[in-house]
Length: 248
Image (cartoon, rainbow, N blue to C red; front, side, top):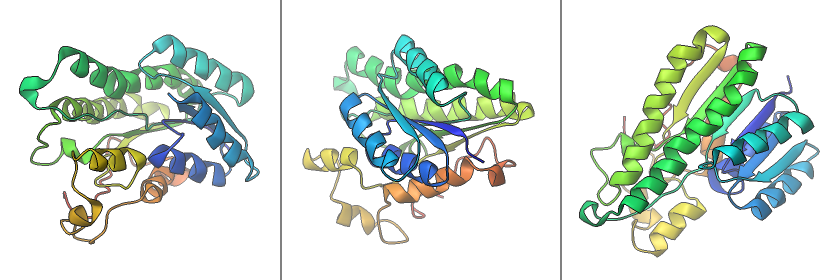
């Protein structure tokens, strides 16, 4: 069945792969991203496959912008059935050097931005008595620790907690809420962190992973698409750990 799916952070990396995967399954896809031009290029590529797609440039930390984007989605595609919150920000700083501004921006994008998108979409799902929500958290919130990323880990840990709370609250309405905490995934964001020296090279990371490779955006997209399907209706409140066995 064709549904309306919104993917935030959908212009690159995991979000882009998710948007393509959902479109390939016949869904109408809205790609939201801070980079509006990149979002439109992504939507153009999706439309080239014969699928229906629109785009919007949105800072998920801006509630008014999120609301406006979803109103456009409703007008052009229909009520929101599926919401995937892939928009995110990373950052590296020693805790003692972390500024209030860095902390606030990280929480605003990763945690409050997720809240904005979900709260704006859930009324459509309640009205239809059906919905699929997948948040993208991080394995850093499950690992023994991530030095230099206290603000990032706190924001993603909050996403995991929010996911579980919503699963309990919304389950009786036919809405499932799950989170994917990716491990090491090769994306533009991870490549930037490696170039700056904040993360080791992927070949080094791969040796730490039982399956001996880093993940791809398509790995995330495959799991996400399943969680958004009819077949996943009995899965909610779960962390679907995609990390090659590094964290169990």
